[in-house]
Image (cartoon, rainbow, N blue to C red; front, side):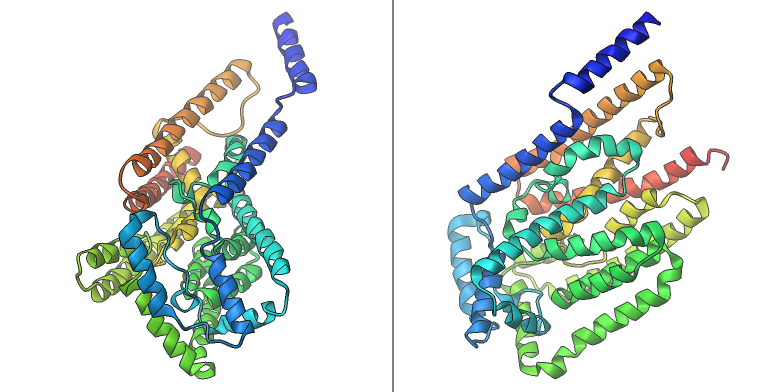
Length: 437
């Protein structure tokens, strides 16, 4: 009894008079993250994508064609790449981006505002997009996981796909789009309200058509979403095809210039299909047929596999928080051109999948901490061991990236390995939550 009173008094003293409390520690981590972004922005390249948006807005304001100058821009990049190596960022040319002519009316509206207003608004939108992505990922964690995940959230913005990179400084609009999509997905998989999610995906697809693959996520989470998801997908396809009627010349020019993005910019992405295309391109071999075939086959296989998993998850009656990270990462695998900012959107789900797989593999239990003091101490000890082991696993690919090959050969194996760990953990969760089956 005296020991318990002493421990209680010590705990009260720490909570009441100690300076380093948990909320303050979290606030310090967020402050450190903001300072890091500012320092990186002041000392290195920044906004290589957002500068492209600004140049396009100026071009639209002057009445020029934003789908011009592609050849010269890429030729200049190839010369810089030959001189500086892999550290050079490819040029952002609006015509060579995934942004089709249907986005030009929005740019004409934005061109009516002063530059400083657009700059302030866009920086705020980017920050909001990053925060929404982190918030949506945090919703997939259970009560125990949130204790350590809250401390890691500020750092995860610098580890897209769990491998360190400075893509957060690019200013790519994908951060805003994914922020809206993932925030709208939360009421979808939690309460079955997917209306805002479909609107967010269609809005994002106006900028980047591959975002339509995200319409598979509601189907995986709720089998009643087949019809509304199909309607949304049809609307997205019609919206994309209508450009050839409204802007026939620009649409043909955009398609032609987009091909140049692969032919000369080697901008294939970092998924399995992208890695094949990049390997063939670097050897001077034709890549179009091989990547197209692999893209279709890979998407079909992964799609069927995800539908099978969704069926089993419903049979096992697993919590949606258990299935949502795996379903979301699997959905993004359907995109043949996964870029770093795409992987940034699934960093938290990947982290949760890896942590859960490690915990299950080591046989550590989950659930609320019992009232017994010894059990409470053992639970905290297991958590510390799990955090240390997880940190070591996270450190390995990042050390390889910093000390060895560039980012791309490391990220694809990490992505596939974490997805496999997430799939394996589903069956282990079934055994843990329903031992009688």
